[in-house]
Image 1: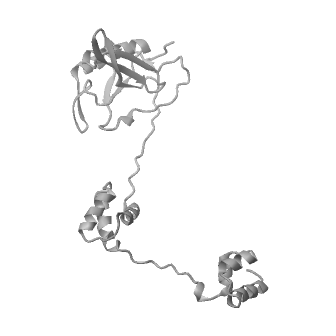
Image 2: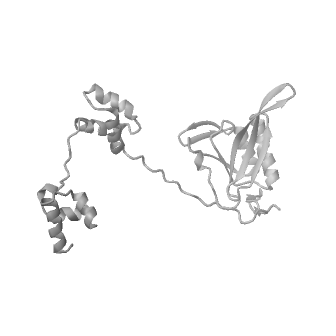
Image 3: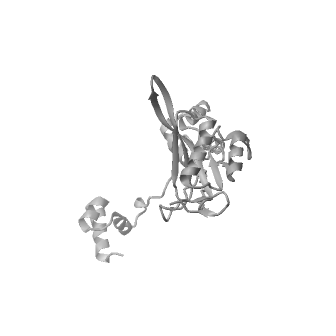
Length: 253
């Protein structure tokens, strides 16, 4: 509330001296809305008026289309509504599409904390090419990472053959001093021969190797390499989370 004397002065300046609202507010050091309330006239009432838009007849069509195809581009929608008689611009349609496009469903990720020796992650890595004599060969690396400690062993090869794949396992087990109970694969051809849904057919040579070392192969879901877990930090860099073939924990120093 402002003093009655100030209300009187505001009304005098506006109606008698014909000052603008902004000028009165600046002169008296008050907010323009305070000046409008002091004038108490319908002239300054500012009801919100929603103006009709040329896009209004097409909003229902846009909403239904975006519900069915949420990733459809605004330019494609513009062509679709223009064929239906839309006379407006693509800019207006873009602004409408931003409000009508359904938000993508958030993906929930569950972080799992594994025990020592529970899981290892296997994959191939590419490192460009290497020259051997007069030949140029592709340089690859077989990589096995222990999920708990993040200890890593890599074996560089000039191919990604099955023999190099199996040899990489054996070299990693020897270097890390043990074998994880579970080996996780990213549906690579060296490991998975065929997959239909949850039904997986592993390469028989890989199954023979896992049977010899008493471990279990498991694949990631298709298109979900993020399932290779970011596990807990190792509390001691001198302890590897591997387990020997008898099933007892093994500490490698």
